Length: 607
Image (cartoon, rainbow, N blue to C red):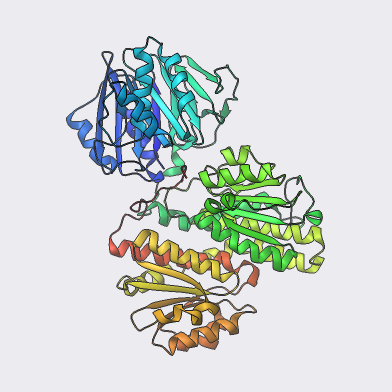
């Protein structure tokens, strides 16, 4: 979602802010701005659209000052334009904000009645005006901010500077992440550690409800009630080198091609090559005693959860419930005592998933998380953390994080099946061998890139595209459709192949391409029957299968893509890669913004 950066030091702030905001572009945004103090007064530059527009404005109208805040905005209240772009300011306060102030209407009405004028349509301006009102009553900036924070309901991360205060910045968080960066004679605030990676490797993660008073010499963290509290200063391994595109045109393509490597990195954490077995960290529960597993996630991570449900139930014999995080806690699900609640999130900061995690904690569940950011809020609040080791993922459309989630889940399932006695030693060895071969097989899949690129020219002309699969291939069909729609803006839907004749087959005609995912697994013949049904109705089929599958059915399809023959257990991991490449090439052909598609954000930190 919105990106926040703050800097206080000796160097000129505006260029540092602009460079840092570029590192936050991956979060998704529709406007941007910066504010600094110039001779004690707040000066702002804001622009609708991409950072290039703000950069051009700063070239024409440079900003002086050594203290400043910057922001990339993803609109929640008010249309994306310059007026609503952050930072928001009064004559006394400038503020940037990620999140939603739920009671802003009440605050706005109260402040308007007191004579304060509002000029934007945003919820954030209410915070700036509220702090100003407390300043006008004679409170100092720290006290005024504390009083204002007590009134705010919702989720927020804030960075605030004050007119006439060249050595003071205040940050606060509730429900949205915020980190403090420590330098030598300079200090920083950021939405995440990646934003500060080129500035410092010393980071403090603010806890829920924390706020922080910063000057050039350091920071004092306080709890919600204003009491000083110690928070650990950690050294982060992130660096600026991790977020370049290399020789690739887009981050998304780079991240697709990184998958053999990062899948290997993930396996190195959970697979012992000497014993050829899965080795997880010590578990705070016994798989053999679990009454139930509940998996909760959003978006692409939810499709990873769907695959895991098939795996847990088929391989480990363990009952699994899955749900979308934004729906889960609102249905007040009954959860058996001692169950496992597993949460999946690339960022570890997804607001709905984090709220669901806290609900599960209240229900007496063991809480585990699978995240790509090991020091995220979800990780810090979990009993067990399984890191996906995918590295920073900048493209908004998730690729390598998804396959690394699947690999992590596969390792967890094998461990669960072994602990429950659901598989014998021979089958455990087979599954372990299959998962160990995934990095090499993923490299083989990438060899089809040129053929997929050629196929994309035909798909780019379609108005609608369908994806079908059965069993664990069904969630991959859903993921393929999601990838296509989110970056190419072509309408796409994924279906369980057996459900076509219950309605969706009415959509089939010669203008609707259908992507069929059918590895040689126990459901292959069923999928083959569904494929023949749609071909009989004029569909142009793109058939993804292995050599045996293509030998059996390839002549019926308009196009075929041959994938490596693997144990069906790991097929969903590999079949995700060609649908990622297809979506990427279609989007490039259509000329969309691949890495930052319209209306989307990388990390959804508001409900």
